[in-house]
Image 1 (cartoon, helix red, strand yellow):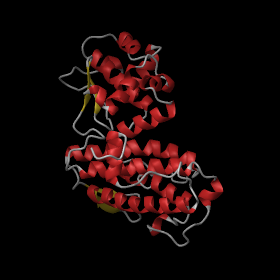
Image 2 (image 1 turned 30 degrees about the vertical axis):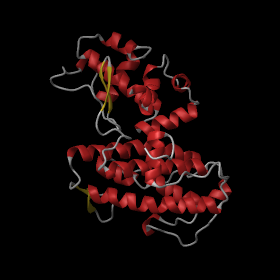
Image 3 (image 1 turned 90 degrees about the vertical axis):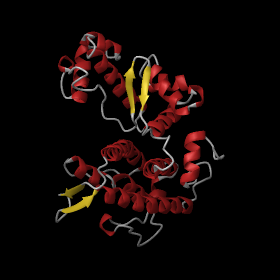
Image 4 (image 1 turned 180 degrees about the vertical axis):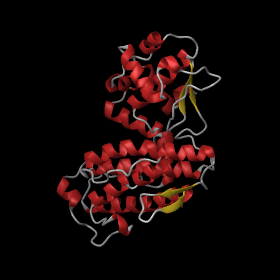
Length: 315
């Protein structure tokens, strides 16, 4: 039932709010803006603003395909001007609202990291690949979501420490992947947890090599993770839907270029991320992190129970 579905309540707060500000959306869920933002991102793989904007554009596209004028679609989607709506629509769909093909030629959905789409004026479509309600055998989806959530939790914990404590060498000689450089401090471990997926994403997407020489203070890493996590999740979902795990990429970012199976890439990242997440926990404990800021138990069983029921009791 809807009232017993925490994710659906959060989605309703995002989409039903009179305004698009984070404060107004959070008020609809009776949560603080901070906890609302984090809960929606954890549950849907998108920030509240990004989710609301994408679904609004999908609704506008659906309406355009059924004869609504661009002006009416723009204001219904919450835009103050037709010009602003047209720019956003072109960025999302690759063409202006006036060129939206009919439904028989093109659907109105945009790429999403979570399977949540506008379906009709009365239905929000959430496909079977939803972020939290994994089928019993969907181990990959569980592991990927757990990995991203746990990195987020570790960054939150590290934010309680000062910069000197984060940069202090705590495990001399630690280098799980030698080509990445050392993992001897909290900062180094968290930095690698956040950026290690970006070169793979660039290779898979055919994009230029990412700039990995980025600020490594915890607030900057948290922002970087918020950008990378939904892209990684969207890539995983796309490969899964296409059954493309045996597809191979030639990574021109390597020297010399090297080929990798998509399945190998994900297994590689999950393996080293799990190791580094445990390193980060040990280092946070060594730094004397208090119980009020300690990261939650990393056991995927307990993580799944927390995300589905809000507690550690068996579901």
